[in-house]
Image (cartoon, rainbow, N blue to C red):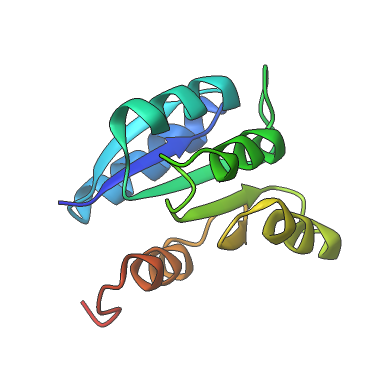
Length: 125
């Protein structure tokens, strides 16, 4: 069972995403800010991180940079998530170290394809 760290400060988004991912067999860890996400990534070593980019305490941009600078977490795939569908945001997310980027509201089939691709799983399942 793949372990996903979902970093999301919005309770409704967190609940919806975690329930849908659990239904598909993922084990979900939750963090509500970037600081907690960095700490949990080091302690729990998730297989993948879904990182909201607009977070309190430490935003997703800085949290991703810190994860990429650490030997323990530098290879964990990260998908940046943002409600801002600005063209520059996806480029910026990739520049700070995200492997992929998706916009909110999340379209589950599209997000699952990205997750499966990064985890090396067959997307036809």
